[in-house]
Length: 226
Image (cartoon, rainbow, N blue to C red; front, side, top):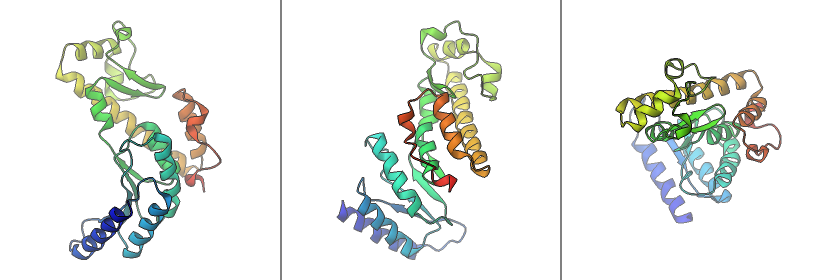
C-alpha cells in the first residue's frame, strides 16, 4: 500500500508538470486505502504540489460501509477548504449524506441510473423494488414527496407493468425519478448548509428512511455545521 501511494504521488507530480490548459481543472487523487496515516501522508504530498481540487479515491471498492464513512470523516477536514473536495464512485443516499457531513462537495456514481434499470427506486422513506407484486394494483406515485414528472403522471402499478413487460420506457422513467430524487436530496442539503442546520437535516433524512440512529454516526455537529 505504501509503494502504491508513492507511485500515486509520483504520477501526481508528473501530471501537474504536464498540465498546459487553464480551462481544465486538475484534481489530486488521495490514496492510502483504509490506513489513516497513509491517507494523511497522501493529502500532505498532494497539497504541497497544489491542485485545482482534491478527491478521495479507493473508496466503495468492497470495504465495509462504516469503514468507508470513517475514512471520509477523517480525511474531509484535512483537505483544503478553499478547493473543491470530491469523493469518487459513491454512492447511496446515505453515503452522500455522510460525505457531506464530512465536508465533501462533489460525488459521482452510476447507482441512480443502474439501479433504475434494475427496478430499484429511491424515495424519501427508503428504497423501493418496483418489480414486487405488492405494487401490481398500487395507484399511488413512487414517492408522495417527489415533484418529478414521473411521480406526477405515473402510478407504481403502471411502472411495474412497464418493467415486467420489458419496455424500455421503464428504464427511462425509473431513471428520471432516481435522478430527480438525488438532485432534490442535494438541493436540500445545500439549503440546509446555507441555513446552518445540516445536522438537523441529516437526522430528519435518516428518520424518514427509517434507519437506525446508529447509522447516523451522530457524535456531534459535522464539518458542515462548523
